[in-house]
Image 1: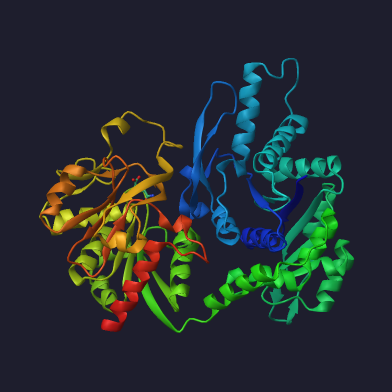
Image 2: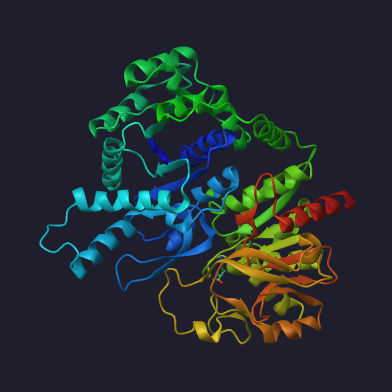
Length: 552
Ligand code: GLN
């Protein structure tokens, strides 16, 4: 029978509740329990696919595409999910299913469409019980599908948010229906006031009181603070928030986030949660625990560093590219280096290309980022041009790959004004464009090429050197494509098509033959990178970056 751990947040968002959730999952995995994770996002979007990364952070893409059927006759494709799923996959090393991301949009859509179908005939549709029933049904569906020993359910946002209310109410009902089968972990901020040199517990007390007013008493309180909570602070939180002191857990600032499960384990959180859930007490498996410890040490002790420039358009919040940042860290750690990332907003180059002249000398590699739309794109194309001219190790991801091709077309093949039709619909050389069958699709949500697809890699390429295999599966999220007729022509100038789809119709990767290492991939290898198993293409990129740094 599945046990449930609900994770709520208080005081403010952005406390790293996703990392807490994933770390709790790891504690159960250490004990040999099977774990799955649900993330609830109280916003009204059906999925985060159309959200701006500056507003919401990265959109994560999973391997599977889920056909969401809110009511008979309606279908939506969902593979784009919340960025916390990236954290779960990286910590827990499991592939998550898109139906594990539940949004208010999905819940309300289902209930309203069912009402139109007449499924509730005669009834007034209300938040309680219809919305809360739908929420509980969705949670139990995940338990039924993946049948884990422990299902973690992270509720996005903070308690007290209006849109999160129905979800918290559903949690209350859930706990009533399954006594002894659930635990509630509340993550709050314990701020440090420098002027008086004290950690303050009042915000935690208030947010727990908000939870209590909704009929929810947390079993565990995780206090986010700059350092470990001293005993007296734990005692105070225990007294005021009505939890035993051993259930007040520190969540300090860390250089290496992968260390958090170890910090939780040392505080006895794993055993405590097993007790609350009535799971047979088990000690962590020594081998699994030691392996994780060794892994965190790998991340903590780099011998050297390399600097990579990431010219992009969503640089003001680092969460926009979180999977890329992590994939670079994974690859770096396994090569013994720390990867320093220099994010540069490309609109700055557009105004002053001289900035690039200086930057290009300082850096050891360039990663051109994914993206959409036309803002900042000329700067990205310019950056790719510089990488080609200076022969700097370069990895282009999705949009970054498409723009590498645009730069190649313009500056190597001499196709003046070449572009992607996404950026310039009137370009004389549409080297990146929609496929004919895509032109009739008008809707934006869920209509891209999404999820895991087979990629065929050609032997003798740099990409093949990275993967060492002819067929792989990588994850995609794009609408536009490198046009084969232009790619064929580009071959005469030294461009190599290094991968296609199985049928050879879609171009999945390109590279420059006579370069140190200039590679573009249409897919997003960062979504499959794990701390213990870095993405092969990121690893090969970092190896070349190190080689280049040493050669300078
Ligand atoms: N905007 C481009 C496309 O739709 C690239 C998308 C991306 O970088 N994920 O094809």
